[in-house]
Figure 1 (spheres, rainbow, N blue to C red):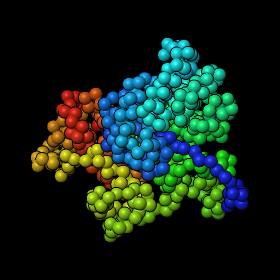
Figure 2: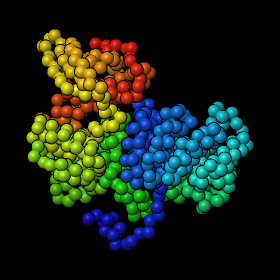
Figure 3: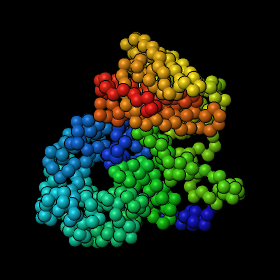
Length: 529
């Protein structure tokens, strides 16, 4: 054991509690390519609740009817965390959040208003006095509708410190229970953040009666460092997202902040309520929902986070794990060893292993997954944890039915492209069979499936990546299409990449039917698959 670990054990340390405010569903979803349907938001919200976050910012209700309904659904169905909605400092926005979160076990209205000179001059066209008056009026209205009100001074880091202190003092007096100091454009350094938060703790009137919060962006790659500096200087809420997704370069990554506090407990003396073994499964779920792979070198949850290839590193690990690992992989949800399951394994063994990986299913969904597991086990000699993760994450309720694949055959003609035939069955009993030619088997299969379903898709991107190891490894196909002005993603997993591509195309087709988007008008270009 390291000297730091021995010291931490020898001297009990009293630790303060840090509240984790997760904005994956709001700030994270605002980033291009990360939009989610209502069903996907609910799925992520439940995962965040299971993870132990204190606050879920579910969306921006006034932004659209869809966002309003998503926030309402999260507020109605998710229990445990505070459910929060974002509002501009306008009565219409504030009242929309109150309506959307009225069924929440605990609700919060989060108001933001820019305070920096550049925003006052170029965005708001408001004086200092007008900003101050607007902020106070908005917080008072929110307090009439909700007991828990958070105020964010947008672009606080580039605001004159004296004016920021004046604004925060005024909104606390007006009834705010949380005051947030965002580094909206990721401009600050840890030293600047630490100095500012220490000053706010000294000079803002009433600061001891509220929670001081930090919200840092990653434009200079300092979001996590700045968040930790704010916590060290007295902030007791940190705003972050899974994987650090968010506007532009993103937000502070929840898993990095939490594990820094845990791993360097003797330094920060701060705790969270996060169930850290669920960090990796939650990150994997988000990656699957938004169709974006986790970078292999991503801290905490990347595939290489606990991988060692260098001979020197391997030698050190064999001698003593702490030579090159400062965290245990089990503590963030990785399995130290690959548990092998096969075609003779039963449902109980599958349920237990899935639970250890952070996946819980009711009996109906477990039975569906068990059927898919058996089919996979017949194709592979061994089924590893990464295979099980892929199976579990593939059960997306937003992509199920009404079309199911009954038959698939693809043939490559050397030098002359490929052909494919498919048969689809609709939930209304229809059987549709189609054949198509393509540049390759994947292209031919995609064309055949969309013809059978009676729609065409404008394909933006198609990717295949391995999800496990070995010659019989599973591959995941990720398909991104444009349909009636919307971007839709489909994913498929199989030991056969052509079958994985077919599953991805079928998922997109099913999303279109479920979302009732109607027929597409754009044809598939011959070079797009």
